[in-house]
Image (cartoon, rainbow, N blue to C red; front, top):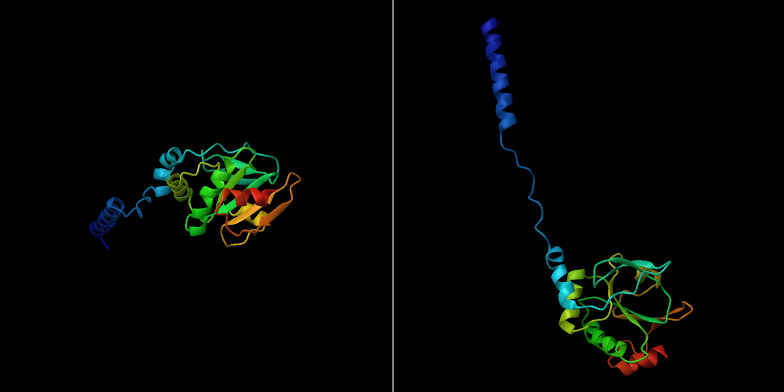
Length: 186
């Protein structure tokens, strides 16, 4: 191979390398569009107007306060009524306003609705639509539900006594009046 052919090969190789280097590349899929969760959650928090969550307790289970989005620990100390619910659960949608009405009565045991199996945005939207203003939390990792050994069926309501005993309320299986809640916690 003569000198001229070698230089021709070098120039061709460099030319091909330059074209490859400058060729536009697909940079992969575009970043995902903001989800409804990230777009609307601030507006939904404002719209829901939930009462503030209690300050974090020691030894509690990590949950997210739906009212302001902060991480907090829900301690299993009572008296307190814990209600597990989801946005797709029709009986839950009937029970939440009853629990809210009960909680507004003088001397009522504090009620904490715990959103499971749903997004924060969907939960906030439902609470706003129902007019329920209870301090509510999101148990996205199901840690609290596992801790109390709650069943997968919803709604599931638990009464936590002052000494930390947790008992499921099954009579009635669904609260339809504030008086039923009062009877169940006494």
